[in-house]
Length: 124
Image (cartoon, rainbow, N blue to C red; front, side, top):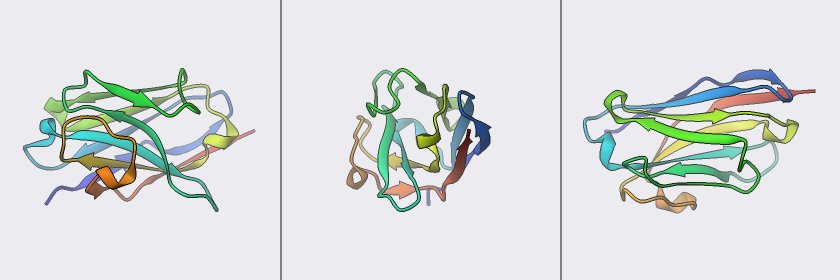
């Protein structure tokens, strides 16, 4: 059974940076695409970023484009979300998710395994 564990969240001032990690168990991590989603208080969960199994393809939500970067280290079974120039509206619980298909996807239904989430709070 695949387990995904997010880490790296915390409290940061607006304009600051954080790097989230998504560590996965299992030996077949390298064949899966991975996505990041977030859910702010009172709002629905939304897509943030996704990366293909090889790392060669990725996509970002318009709201984070130019500020966030996504990468993966398949040798470490880990995907990273580098978040720069953080804004108050980036405050949310961030989740990573695994997609059995190796290609990128932006919808929740395309992912079959989820982590528990990590809180990111951006203060003024």
